[in-house]
Length: 406
Length: 209
Image (cartoon, rainbow over all chains, first blue to last red; front, side, top):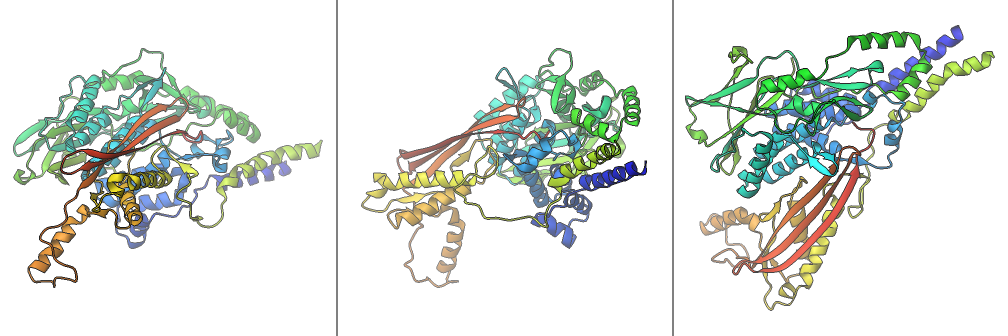
């Protein structure tokens, strides 16, 4: 019995070493942030990114990038998103580590994180906003086009993309460039997905973006936790908002439901992701009729089956029965679902465009948030100012929930 | 019988040691210089360094042998910058990397047969001219001119892409078409055109979700 005990201890020790984080050297701006303490609110996140290395690089840097973006640390945000996108866009060929990691002996969660399509698309969304802020509208447009491609869906050689937010922003970037033909083509595309969308006026020069709610969640389900499922973010009630400026009230248009983007592929509801492949629900394709009405999105969410607790009981019972070797073999067959996710993303992204002269703004722009019953949520009220992007273009951005965590 | 049982017990450890191998690495990142004219082992479907080098070299050679630029009695004045070189593609790129390399390599190879107007340095030139004319700086060693040089020709062009994606296989391909055109700044005639195109296909590695 003792003889069996030592191999088990040695195995567990080795496993802990194997699964511990790989350190990675920080890029220069991040190193400056860490060593010179110039970004105290980002220190912990960048320390985590450095400590956890390549395995969670994309995850940690997209989260750090969004935090930096919220803090108006635009250089750091740019660095973080550029580094993350570099990894998202890169393909390793004939790489030994890739080949080994491809082996099913690795759990899904041990693999380098590159994000699901909606997470990758959102990385391009924020990178595009950073380009807009710098007045680099051509690269902003390129970022949005790349984001749209992350959402592209191929079926019988027909590409589909229903990420209306990115299509709209591609149009807006074109409008900022004075390329109204391309802009209008993009707005027409948005109208196919959002029939009640009103395109910006040609002389609109200000884009306001407000993000509400909390990120979609990924959960492991099924026997062996091998099924990845999506759930809407929880513990928030805001659904709508309006902005107030110069005694004028403007409603914002709910352009994108990020949970919807997570839980669908080309308009089809994903039941689960199993071994990296989406398995769709036995429902008819839900075409681009979604859903400026957030209530509709709620219906979509409720149609996704809830977590099955009996499955969890089944798993623990199974784990109690099988030996270490059998567990390894079980992992070989059914790798555990990778539930890492970008937890600071919003639930809904709202937009509007205006023609403004920021010099005439008497006070900062105020955002008021409402719940599903259209009651104001006083605790979430926020104020923000416009950023001059150059060429008489302005951008205002805020969110109901801080990306900096609790 | 006993020894076979022992082997069975150590088997999971053996598996883990094998699995851990890629995560146990030597100290520090390794840095190596790469040839910018060769494709990189780490690739995407965007524009890489070797494409910029090959593309600008090709355009340079074509411009240098064009009679308008090579056989003109007076060196033509050319403006090459990214002002009218538009990125309409899905590839994020600093366009100056293309136009700067083209201008610099052309300037070196032309050896005075073509004159390059640095329109992107206009503010710098204006500032110095103002200092000189206001007497806050001496006239320098070269003759002063009434006006800055005008251009005869200017580079325009576009970067365009066409993409295909198949998430089922993780395959994406991107066709780049990059056009270069030299425009007569008096008549608007396009006196020279060049094009560089390439298509890249990549398959996302199975290790990623």
